[in-house]
Each structure stands twice: as structure tokens, then as C-alpha cells.
Amino acid sequence: MSTSENHASPADAIVPDTKDWTWVLERPCPECGLDTPAVAATAVAGMVRDNARSWLAVLAGDEDGLRRRRSPEVWSDLEYACHVRDVFRLFLVRLDLMLDQDGPLFPNWDQDETAAAERYWEQRPQVVAGELAEAGEALAAAFEAVSGEQWRRTGDRSDGARFTVESFARYLIHDPVHHLFDVTGERV
Figure (spheres, rainbow, N blue to C red):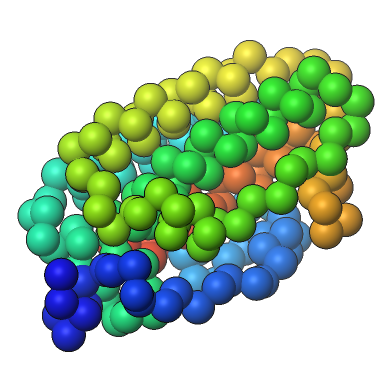
């Protein structure tokens, strides 16, 4: 694929996102419009399902268009979809850790390293759609099963950020919602 046409390729450098996005737990996101502090943790399962369905619609588009980047430094729609699939998978693992262990420390995850290692730009949209739907449903079902005191269980990132299952649920939902905005331009 030609980078002159802004197609994704392994040589294209993505500018790493080094922001600490935990601020979304304190105030609405001015970009995507999600008011994360107002999201009820019990609503996250349904929001994950709705978001996954929206990604399936995105992935039904023209394959060449899905691979095209708006600029060389920004992921294509396909790459964003792969990332959301992997976020759903990662957050399921982390949720399971929080429910099974006392105060686990989450293993580090480098999203850009994963994108390169998994060659997001080469993945097939139909396959990604199925995997994203499956990952979204598994995560939604896991959040639906949380009850009572489980919402107060904690887990920590290596950067010192501490989450309860409740804040973790709200933090999670911002990521796929924001990336859907990145792709569609539609605010919530």
C-alpha cells in the first residue's frame, strides 16, 4: 500500500499517545462529548454492546477505505477497530483480575507496540468485525455479572492509577466511544 495515499503500512510512524486519560473520570470529554462521570457503571455493559454494533457498521465499509489513514500519523478506521477489539479483550482480563485477586497490579500494555506486532493494517475487516463483536459481548457479559460489593474491588496500573471496578467500567467506556468519534466524527 502506498503511503502517498495515506494507507497504513509498517513504516508509518504513529505518534504515541502518552496522555493520562484518567481525567475523563472527573469531567466530560470535550472532543467526543461523553460525560463519563455521569455514566452509571451498570450501564456500561449495554454501552459496550451498542459500541460494538457501531464498529460492525464501520467495518462493513469499503476495505480500501477502511485501510486509508486521514494522515500518516493517525490510525486508519481498521486500525482503530483492531485497537477497540484489543481494548475489550484487555479490559476483560483486567476485570477478571480485579474480581479474582485483591488489588492486582495490571501488566503494562503498549497499544502502539501491539498495533505493530499484530500488524493491524493487514488484518481483514470481516475477521476483525467478528472478533470485535465476540470481545465486546464477553466484556459486556462480565460487567453484567458484577454486583454488590464487587463494584468496590480495586486494581492498579503501573503508573499508580487506582481503579475500583466501578471507576474502571466508566474509564473503559470512554476509549471505544472516543475512537468511534475519531472514525465517524459523531459526538455522543
